[in-house]
Amino acid sequence: MQSTQSKDTTLIALKSVLTKNSNKMPPGMKAVRQTSHQAHAMAQNAFLLRKLRDSATKEATKAWVEASKPCRTKKEIIEMINNKRQYKGFVKVYERTIQHLVAEGIIGVTPPRRGHDDSIPPVAYRALKDAMTSFISIHQASGRHEHRMSDLSRIIKNDLF
Image (cartoon, rainbow, N blue to C red; front, side, top):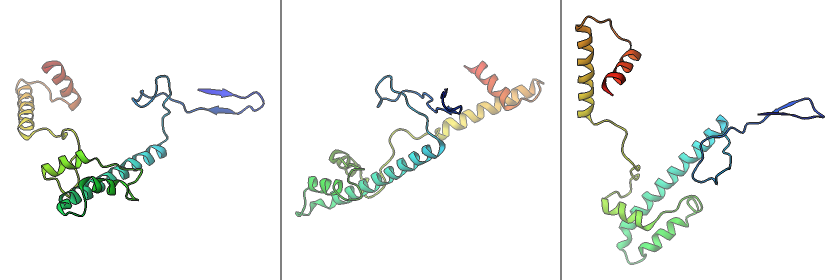
């Protein structure tokens, strides 16, 4: 989108490119694409917040286990960690989460990431590898020419799915 000014003959390029709507934005509001520097800064901030959250969780699980001493209750421990200077306003630790982690034995370590890991199980990977190897050997035995990777992917999509 470009606009011109009547007094000035300069062109002003506006960077308001629409991206997909976020759940946090009201309908009709534009999301402006970020420059590479802004995107890097945002990713760095998200990384630092994750590290803060992990360290707060580690500290909370350790303190939770040591709460058997009569000096503090578990709610006081959660409030103490949430009110620490380095965490306050950035990270909030919840009692239920810490209780759940301690029950699973995850104490003083980085909490596991949510969701499934993105790896294929070894048995399934070996089966896929064997199927692909036999597919290629059958095609070579039939006297057809050797395929490129792009040809193989197209054949697999058309024949198998």
